[in-house]
Amino acid sequence: MALPISPFKGISEFLAVGETMNFTAAARQLGVTPAAIGQSIRNLEAKLSVQLFHRTTRKVRFTPAGQLLYDQVSPAAADVFDALTSVSNLGKGIGGVLKICVQTLALESTARPLIQRYRKAFPEIGIELAVRDGPGDILGLGYDIGIRLGEFLQPDMKALRVGKPISWVVAGSRAYFDRHGRPTMPEDLLEHRCIRYRWRGHESHYKWEFYRDRRKIVIDPNGVMTFEDHLSMAHFARNGEGLIYTYYDLTRGDIEAGNMECVLTEYMPEPDFLYVCYPSGRKDPRIAEFLNIARQRSALAL
Image 1 (spheres, rainbow, N blue to C red):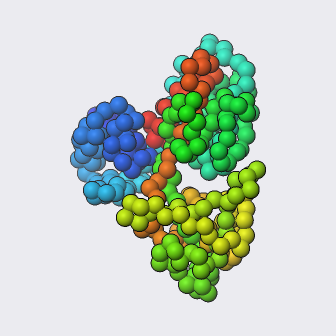
Image 2: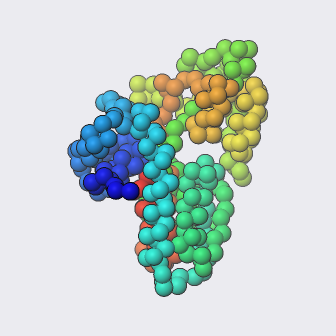
């Protein structure tokens, strides 16, 4: 079957915007200007005769056609990357074990896909994976690499941003809101039943952060329950026990199905990002190859 002229032109730019939902961030990933990204997207839309993104001054999101293209092209881009990496790594012969420490929220979206591609490219390198939330000395604990939110990066480590933005939500079940009403401002949470989060090994629980007119507001919620994992929090929130403060992807399915709702959306902080953090100045081919895979994955917006 004959392919159209330049079938792949603009696809890298499209995937990068699809991952970040931000033209500037996509330009930074690919090492070009935001104007160049915008022109590539316009050219691709003209070639396909369909709009791929809704754009405003504050937000970028897929059109139905854009979402369809992203869902179909992303797996193919992953296969291309895996093939290129496998060929490139023939004969390198790197061995040993790579020790990785990740936060829970990085497991599904970032850590497991990266490790799967890394193992495919370097089957002779073993993996030790630990899950630790909250602050901690990654190097002092003996790990080679961490995958963590920006607020937990250590000053003596370098960092590479990976993955999509992580949005935060306050969510509860429809049954809970029917019984207790909906908070309309952060201070209202003091009158609500909240399910709190505590980092494993720490005595204090996480305080909920909001912003009003760019001013930070910290709420210490009334805790009917406290957990050291977000999955348990979501389970009991889904069953109407209280409200949770968590990352959106954990509740996406319930929200889209109408089982849970988000509140206080106008007060939530800006999205966070995950980073692969690694020791500064350390020459280790196992770490270097992991970073190469992370960079390629970000550039392809997988």
